[in-house]
Image (cartoon, rainbow, N blue to C red; front, side):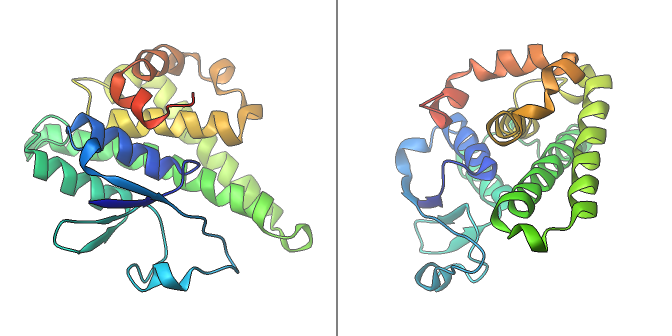
Length: 204
């Protein structure tokens, strides 16, 4: 398998965490590429019309995109019933918490593009403020419900949680989430010591 990736992407890192936990990381060849608005990679677009990462080329040559789709594929391929339960309230809970953490990552990445990639004269301050507010509200909810949010064994939501906070440390450390949301620090520190997380962040 081949994974088109970039080490700066939290969605890529979430996928790598899951790949390691599924025992499939050694079967994946990473191909790091740079993508940016206004600088399209048309060669990559021949395989992935959305030109987004991560993108996984499976053994059959199918190109899967969207980190959740890739994680779901890897989990199913490995036959892992813990990372994403097959059905019932346990599955709903994992998907719910994954959606929250993934949504915070989406807002953070969008803000990075708005504040860094877009020329200053074209930036939209209201959008930036709204994104930061959504991030703040999401982290506040997690801070108040962390025991419920991460209840149970390590799963897709846990992987997304740690990838989310690592991205905030990387791009928005000025937010000071450890001070504002202290309940998140202990589970983050514990998850960061897992081998699957260390494998996704070898330079950390």
